[in-house]
Length: 72
Image: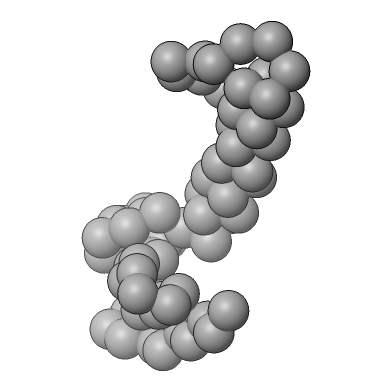
């Protein structure tokens, strides 16, 4: 998987992951434009997605097919 990241205005970072584009930024309170999640938010989001996909794969293959999963 190819990931590229390019700096933009202020703290914005344009991220390309294969066929998907993301924008990371910092909140206005620390000098960003708040146009996307900050890097910490992106990291937590990716961990949450990994956990949910793992549960879906495990639960779907063992005893149920979950319609939705909520992780807080």
